[in-house]
Structures are given as structure tokens and as C-alpha cells.
Length: 128
Image (cartoon, rainbow, N blue to C red; front, side):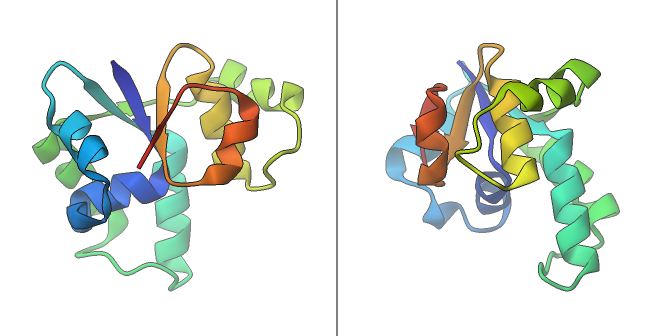
């Protein structure tokens, strides 16, 4: 399975894995699954850290790439098609980062999230 981690799930997997459900933790450890983090999550994390709303073990631009590399999480770039697909999404969710994640998973990925506001989009979801 190809799993796209919502930003909070990405952070939980790296900093607080005990916050994940047992099923999600097992799925993230399963070598048969491909773990992906969106470039939009990197952007969200960088913004939140620079605003003082997020504390990380180091500067996001140094810590996050290394943390993902060391845990086998690959990066999913944001394409113009992903960004433009947001125009076709209903407004179930107002967060621009989450809307872009929804647009990205519509290409056959499963979104790993704890955010119940994602449910109305009808995309494949694994609840964290």
C-alpha cells in the first residue's frame, strides 16, 4: 500500500509514535508499505516552526529531511496538477494544506490521518 502521511501523522511517527493507533503503527512498520510525506507537509511544518507554533528537535530544514530519510519516509512532490485539482474539491475542509493532501491521494494513495474532516471527501483513509 502507498500511504501518504498527513502532517500530524508524519510528526507523530517521528516524535511521538505512541500517539498512533496500534494498527497504524503496524502499517507504518510494514516493509510492504511505501511511506510518503508530501512537500506540502514540509511547507506546513516550516511555517509553523517559524511562527513559534511548533517545537522540533532542530531547524525544520535540517531536521525533517534527515528524520524522514532515517525512517524510510519518501517525499511526494506537489505538481501543478495536484495544486490545480484543489479547485474541483468541495469545501468540506478549509485548511489549504489538507485540501492539497486530499488532491494528492486521489491518484491512488491512502491518506493516513486522524482528522475526521477528511472523511466526506471519499478518498481512501487509514485512521491514525
